[in-house]
Length: 298
Image (cartoon, rainbow, N blue to C red; front, side, top):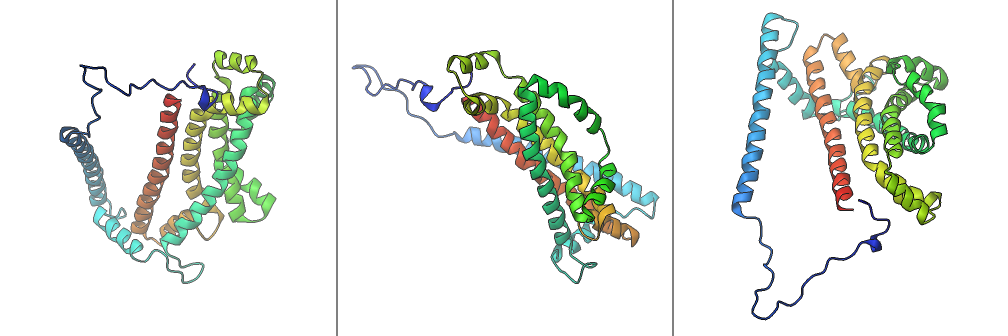
């Protein structure tokens, strides 16, 4: 078995405290050598160099496209606009004149609200469906029918329910971010090793003990993967929803800039959207790695 039921079940490794006469004691741990640090720095430098090469290739293609079309802003124009937007991102001159930082904050608030609801419902429902064959047979057809529905198709339904565009946007995020978490959680809960189930029967685990010691530890890596996919989908969907829904958010900023003929602001907003998405994904990747390390050590 790879998982221990309780921390006290693990045997502590024997440690020699005294060396035998005539024999040297165990070698002391050494600090990482300068060669190891040099190798890490060289690896980081190579990664940074390849990243810069890829970025330069994209910028070159962008420059070629802008030189053949006057409607496409040049990379330098987009960079100047981005610097200008970030110079005062939180100004507020009324509902129709706000800084890009306020729009990003509004979008993140909606995304996190919908994502949190989807995470709670998705994890709980996924545990139930994955652990129960009857629940899987009952709800899997419904999930497979609703999952491919376009996020924008849900917006009129939620708008009719809440009569409020911002709340409708949150629940569009909820319904579209729900499926990756639910499906991955159910898959993780359904793939528990049989020997773990047998141990639970031997120790006569109740439902709470089974969830704590068997179900959740085994399903946790799949849950983290589902959460990462859900966050990526939520951040993509919010831009499209805000183009339809109202007068705030980064999606509205993009659409309003396009209607004003300010494509440089559109390009700058695209860069900001990508950077925020990268940061959100990096946070969840770090969380998934931490869970994987703890899974190996347990």
